[in-house]
Image (cartoon, rainbow, N blue to C red):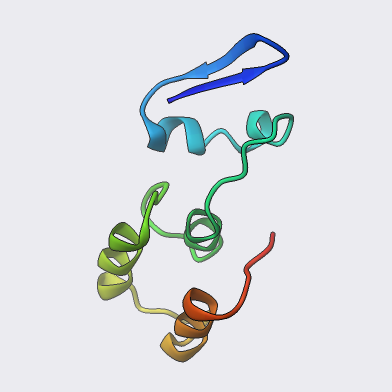
Amino acid sequence: MLVLRQGQVLLVGQANEVLDQEEILATTYVDPHQLTRLGKHLGFRETLRNQEEFLADLQTKDLQKLDRFVILYLLNKGEFSQ
């Protein structure tokens, strides 16, 4: 993955590595996927890129902050913001 700002290369690397650089991404028009942000908020193991990774981690997580019904709502209807 490559991230540019005004023609300058800011980040180059695997998607997980790049999406983990929140402070740098905040200076660009690149917004991590809402599941990436939700996973970080819930303390998941690493930067998640898609629904499959999120659901795989969800299976192993003992969720104390949110229950599964709230997560399903966020996935299907709601919007998660930081």
